[in-house]
Length: 188
Image (cartoon, rainbow, N blue to C red; front, top):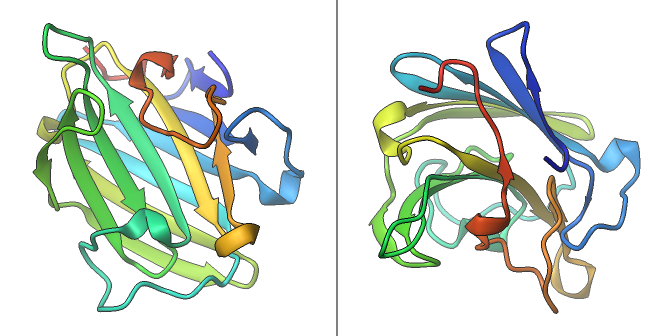
């Protein structure tokens, strides 16, 4: 299950982004925690991540295209594959309050974008905290496979980090078949 761990005694689980995209360990102070809590209507996320001070996206906080080109934490939630591919939801959150939610069906095939999410972020010194609420209807049907990622830095100093490392010659987060199986309490 990679670095995904369910907390059976509480209605939450946590993903820890503790390596580069291809599996090299990162220092503890660079790790990102993504806590997931599911209720009848929504998936709630709590982010605790290092703040690197990368330039924010242009424009006011809110839905922002191309957010993965900035400092960001991402959560991918994939459902079971069918004849047309794996359905998955991609949630991108930035320390500046920008966000992007996409639904895909098959690798990189968008079926909906700029979906609504309640999100707030606050920066505190060298860390940032985020809280988000996504309508449960925007997730694929369970059973779920998940992965969390973090991206920061610019140009040659760009870092791509993952909870569950992925294979390849370069970072490619769109590998839903390789995500860790995870049962979030409340998932039916």
